[in-house]
Length: 195
Length: 195
Image: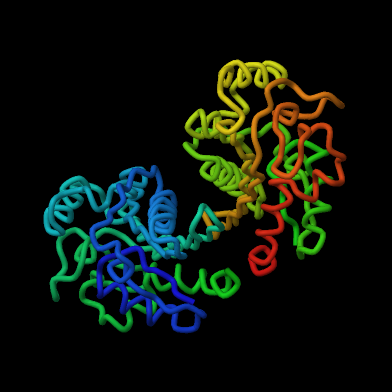
């Protein structure tokens, strides 16, 4: 059966195809079902609400089941922020990282705990069933941007627990294995097989 | 395994025990897990959002998986209202029914279509997985309150498709069989068995 990925991003499609290889679905992009120009405003108050909102809206638009996700970085010293606003925290990855570093200026190591959270939601069309699953990676915010390849999003300032380098310095294979998205996908799989 | 019903209502507990008899869970009320005084504000913008919001809040409070539902009556001539506001549409069942009847004064039979919608949500604690399922009964709004027993909520003014009497005049056994809650529960069962 076809499952539509609520995204226009081919890299994300490849990643999810690998993560959900055991699920009885063929993943396809929105663009393959006539929704190349369709976007959903992420107006939810939580990461979970945004993932559900996207899956629901796309599923109702294309009349097929849709998988969508939302990701955020929760920093304890910022009361869980930027959280659901992570993507809107600045106009580029660099700007977002610099803003976070400056807001944590003076915050000591033991108070810099943070986590990456990913929620995956799947919705059937016509307001049908939904499922969600969450994956979390605990860690802390570094004091400066890490060395290594450019990385993505907040990777350059996030040090996962058990490591002493920022996430962009960790190999992609290793990162995929422990990632919040990978964990969410593994939590989703048993539900998805019976969706 | 225990599954907590996000409700203080023993009648609802009995109904769900019957509906979910095949699920591998023992249903218990909030009151049995120390949440007798706990209530959640239903601030969601949709029936689905409210069901999820309740299941999520209760599950995080009692650290066990919770099942919660929300129900609304969607009237096409009122653009889907009262919908998520069904319970707040008046201060008693009679007042709510009378308000709806007066708002549909002059609306002819063919434009009085409506549906009862029930969404059941189940959430694991600690922001874990969620599932939702929806059950719908299509029908229309009567021109006056139906005869028969007092009924419940909007039952006295709702005529399900295939009937020519209001819902409160239909036997409870028959009503349970076709009800929106029964349909939502049956849609939920395959997911719940693997939750």
